[in-house]
Amino acid sequence: MKFVIQRVKEASVAVDGNTIGQIEKGFLVLIGVADSDTKEVADKMVKKMLGLRIFDDEDDKINLSLTDVGGSLLLISQFTLYANCKKGYRPSFVEAGSPEFANDMYKYIVDQCKSAGYETQTGEFGADMKVSLLNDGPFTIVMDSKELFGL
Image 1 (cartoon, helix red, strand yellow):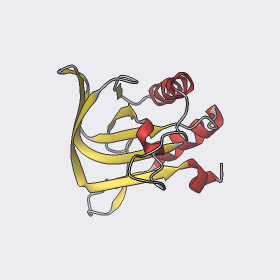
Image 2 (cartoon, rainbow, N blue to C red; image 1 turned 180 degrees about the vertical axis):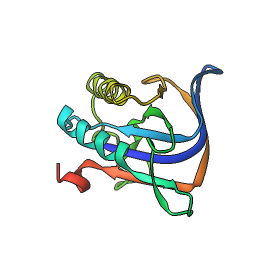
Image 3 (cartoon, rainbow, N blue to C red; image 1 turned 60 degrees about the horizontal axis):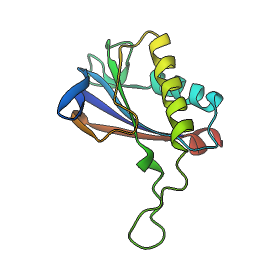
């Protein structure tokens, strides 16, 4: 599982010209799922993401969490995080999870974030989405379950 977490001042996602998700301060998270992922992997990734202390405190030190700043989440499914560019110029996506499984895992992650009490907005799985953001920093973190947990 891969998360690309961007600290944002604002972010939104539109489908067919209609905004379907929008947040102010918080995290825009691009989520990639592989067929080998499990709910246990998702739980670990969500716990790590929600605990990240990457917002500035009163001394301009990166020390505050999403909870500390009252931040929100915009979660976007993105199979292209599993692009393999080793051969040629056209990426392969065979490492990405099957659509049905990836959608189930994406919904699970969304539900976990909502259950933890965070305002959580989403994109639309499989749709042609237009994502807009004002990255704060810029501050972007890539979390990969294989690197973090050896999974």
